Length: 78
Image 1 (tube, rainbow, N blue to C red):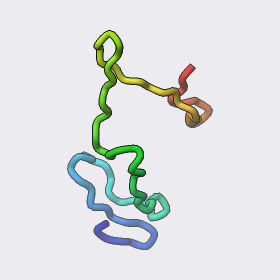
Image 2 (image 1 turned 180 degrees about the horizontal axis):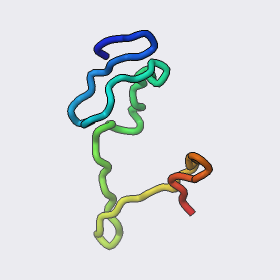
Image 3 (image 1 turned 90 degrees about the vertical axis):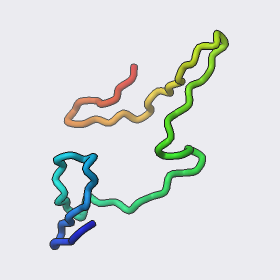
Image 4 (image 1 turned 180 degrees about the vertical axis):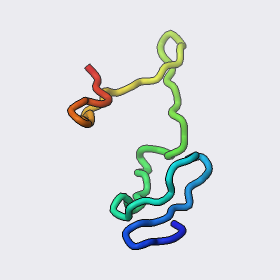
């Protein structure tokens, strides 16, 4: 964070964010919570599994609680 202007903060965003506006309302900010060690590294790519036919694949579990935004379900899995 670079500066606080009343209820807003100016963030020091990396170039990766492109033209994202860096002025944000303080109520939108959250405290950092460290990732649970049981879930592994946050930036590590998932490792593929090796099947019985010696073909590598990824196992994907269904999404349990899809988000509804403006009466439209997002990430809905049937």
